[in-house]
Image (cartoon, one colour):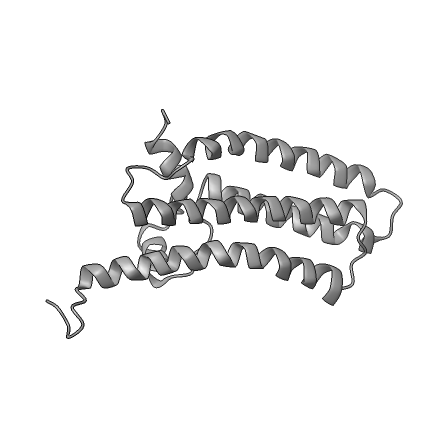
Length: 173
């Protein structure tokens, strides 16, 4: 069935999906600036080593997510069989895990004897970075659509993330 503009339900769905992926890619980048502003300007957290490390980890994971969504968008626009550069994300997964481990060591090592404002924000940001890592490389933690919530309520379990699924499907690339 077509409407007056020649738009079918399929093209409307595809257009909506492309728009959603574009929005996700842009929002991940904007979130870096928003989080930085919220922590260091609005809350006034000092730019100490623990706080800077926590922020850097969140920024790296958000950039990773933005890159994935941008490449997923490119895959769908070009009807490619797989997301471009998917092998890069296979390499990034252990690198991000190692960065999270090193980041925690740096935050914990720098915290003793310092007042809480010099490390608390960094620890919270570290937790956010871990959540982003899980959300991208393992399980979908973000549920921001009705379809996500319906599936979660129906199955009562988290699903694998889109990136994790692409990595599983395209193991040899």
